[in-house]
Length: 330
Image (cartoon, rainbow, N blue to C red; front, side, top):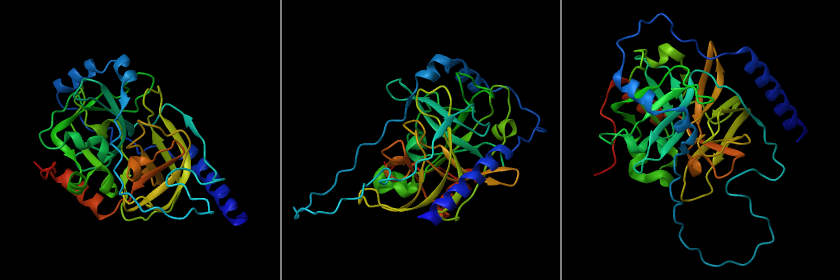
């Protein structure tokens, strides 16, 4: 325990130093904006500060049913929690701040007209137009699904859109086919997705305007330090927290798989899709997003991510090459 505590203290100190000395990946800056985008102009007018502030987190999927089990003799041993902090576990605190340019939030209206929101981050791509979020946030928009005012606002805070709003391209949402086929629970290991954006109202491409983080895959479950950022629904500013990720094997048959697990306080609904970032030359790289096991966790203290491996890289390749996106089975 002493050795673990010292390691955690050193990791936390290193994380604090890196947070103070490492900034976001700089925007390209030299790109010439294209023509004004009328779709972005319409969305910019629609998403007023009041509407953005009133947007609710994406609705959580229904809990997966579990098969009944035969009664057993009472046990004297205390059962470990299926989700949430362990007894005595240290939970790093989070803080509210104005955000960083490559991290922001999606806004859209659901079928009933209610404003919704989910966190996301800009990842580097050849066309400078790609956003990463959770599959359970984006799955309703693949294929020919209606956009319903869907747009991405980088570094949203205090009702402001510092870089405008970037519409999501028609047929531009990529979610793994496995996630559609298995559903949010059985497909929890595939809870990630990409959205291809259009330029903002001034004709700027997303990455040219705000920079990007690098997508890392196949790096395992253990990372330190990790900077996690997310937008709680209804909050005027995002949260950030410095922590570390560990390996988590699901103990819930309804949500099978192995996931990254991270302790950070205050990450409630709306933070789904928020990135887990590690320092990278010139800025940050993303190694996970809030989602996966129990669509990101059932408590504000513990969050999860689907493991980024070959399926994530294949989906990125599909999104960046213009391959037809997956869609629910008809």
